[in-house]
Image 1 (cartoon, rainbow, N blue to C red):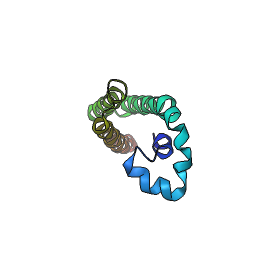
Image 2 (cartoon, rainbow, N blue to C red):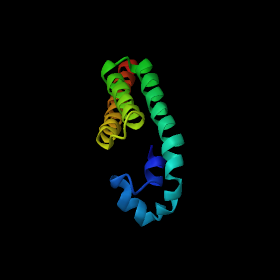
Image 3 (cartoon, helix red, strand yellow):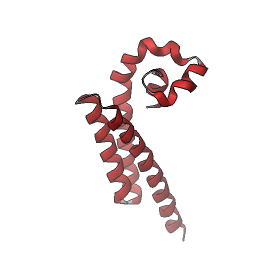
Image 4 (cartoon, rainbow, N blue to C red):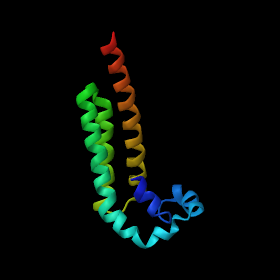
Length: 113
């Protein structure tokens, strides 16, 4: 998702200032390719990572956040371009990643003792 966001600084306000300062505006002609062919597979990679992490720690909350967020992103992307839902989904994937990380650390501490 980061590659897509960086390649499209005009439609992702969060990265507009950084992308413009780094000269990534030159990638704007490939914005459609990035959004159509790169963004959805990265969402699926995040979903697969969430499921694999769940298999390790067996905590349901990170899995629910990850599946709901990925579903929300794909729904907003394919059903109707809903930018607010996309941002909520991206933030939800961030939360799922942090929760999975913490659950994996907790599992590692349990296994050590």
